[in-house]
Image 1 (tube, one colour):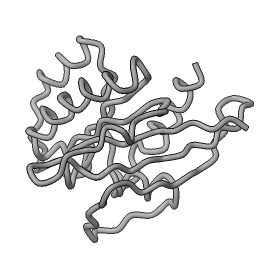
Image 2: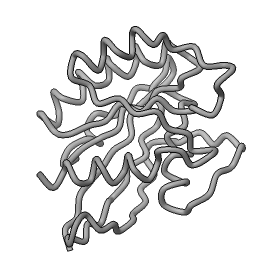
Image 3: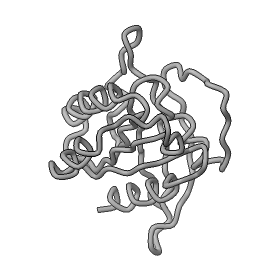
Image 4: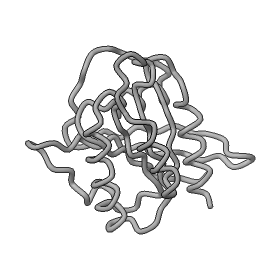
Length: 164
């Protein structure tokens, strides 16, 4: 079995903990829980014929009151940049975190997750901006931890990329 560390990055309340809970435990809760520091979960997945144990690091959301400890990223084989599709400013913040993360991890695989895809009427990310990000080389996925849309696939795809 191979072990890989995977981190979730993003500002507060974008749904990082909900994505982890959906992936690891198959559940969702509307209750908001602030992550303090880091919470680590693990789940084994099969990538082809290789068993991979993912060590999933759910990092505290960075905002005006709390800075992300970039040292948590050391040893990460990949990461998710998580954005709340109903709050466009979280995308700017995620892109800033991406630059800072690359300085720590080097060029490891990552996916940009546009979360809360179930909130269609409240969605406010501009399609042209998303297309520009894709054209610039970002792999963008739309997810919803609430309705379990795209979550499992995102984790499996990132795990496969981390294997090389």
